[in-house]
Amino acid sequence: MIDDRYIEIYNLVKAYPNPFGESVAVVDGFNLTVKKGEIIGVIGHSGCGKSTVLTMLAGLNDITDGGIIVAGREISGPGPDRAVVFQSPCLLPWMSAYGNVMLGVKQCYPHASRAQRRIIVEYALNVVGLADSMHKYPRELSGGMQQRVGIARAIALKPKVLLLDEPFGRLDSLTRMELQDVILGILDREKITTLLITHDPDEAIYMCDRICMMTNGPHARVGQVLPIGFERPRDRDALMETDQFYQYRQRLLQFLDDCEAEKEGRGALRFDPPETVANPLPPAAGLSEA
Image 1 (cartoon, rainbow, N blue to C red):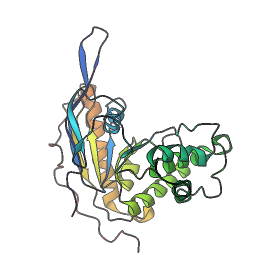
Image 2 (image 1 turned 90 degrees about the horizontal axis):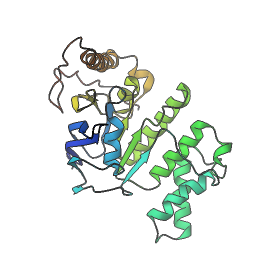
Image 3 (image 1 turned 180 degrees about the vertical axis):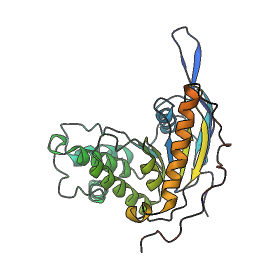
């Protein structure tokens, strides 16, 4: 049975003091529910609070008001049930790829034997395509390979929730697409509930089951949630040949343009209630790989 409320984010608020000592809500009344195993994209203009929501969900940023429930428990800080992959992998330069992944495994599995830990680390590095490079140091790895280590470090913890904060933002387009497929392959196998922060509409459409569009900050919140009707697993070339793909992209770009118009005083932003989108596009059937 699918848990339709595996993650519940309700009335989430994050406020910071301004130079005058007044409290300003960067995120104000953010509401979202996520099904178990679902991949949710969060998109919006720079500074709207996307990463702020993610770091609060990770337990790395205090919540001003509201709350977050994961698997029936309200979070109160960081934990191994929520793994984060940031834009920069932040590897320890004096440790090999194997050592960087092992560091988290030792903390998460303190009672496991040395052999059990080794199996976990080697499996994670093999899944991301680093079986032949696991004993190399960060200085010996390309940017894409370093990010693979960051992904391996996250999945080795067997998290309930995977949080991706623009994990491909510093990579070239070919490496970016390659790592998108690596992560999707992992998620399709492991069924990890995932939140992806991105600026790229195409990436969001290709990777996600639903896309949460945030209004501009301050006082940012959910403007629309767009369901993506493509089946899994997905074939990139097949998707990009469909009209639906470009209709989804136009929907996202129109929302972002409306946000910008409101910011510049060219019009008032109109948005549907969270969790709904007016006239959703029909599901695109027949696009799953055989």
